[in-house]
Length: 133
Ligand SMILES: Cc1cc2nc3c(=O)[nH]c(=O)nc-3n(C[C@H](O)[C@H](O)[C@H](O)COP(=O)(O)O)c2cc1C
Image (cartoon, rainbow, N blue to C red; front, top):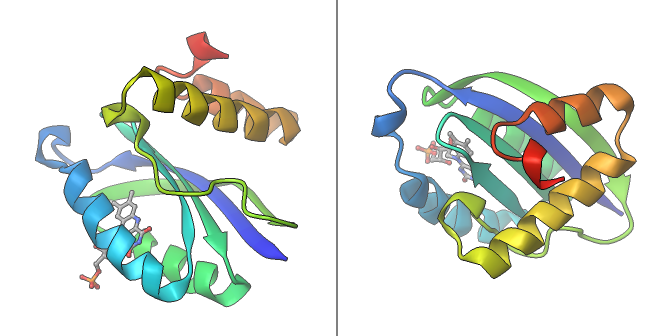
């Protein structure tokens, strides 16, 4: 079984100072080592991240990310066990072409559909996503 944790957070300080590619670069390198995969979506103001992997590896990574001064107000939307990884590889909707973006939105939509009403409402209020559901 795979632990799948999804959270949102808000950029702390100037959004212009955020370099999503730099975050992705470091994440891919570190996560490859710990067997964690997932998705990182950035809309210019908020992050939505899904982490999938071994229970303790996801725990350690989430705790580490939570201390990053580039964001704050982390809210866990979903934390559950899944039989297989649902987010195969890292993707960044913000910087992707139409096809990848559609796949990404589809995945987020499916995840939201399974979530509780409160979690779904949070997903749907995520900037730029609502109109795509
Ligand atoms: C929204 C967000 C998501 C992040 N996701 C990851 C991640 O999945 N894996 C990772 O190693 N670092 C991630 N980081 C970066 C870490 O917080 C940290 O900067 C990085 O792991 C380097 O840590 P170190 O300086 O202690 O080596 C993320 C940062 C932010 C702001």
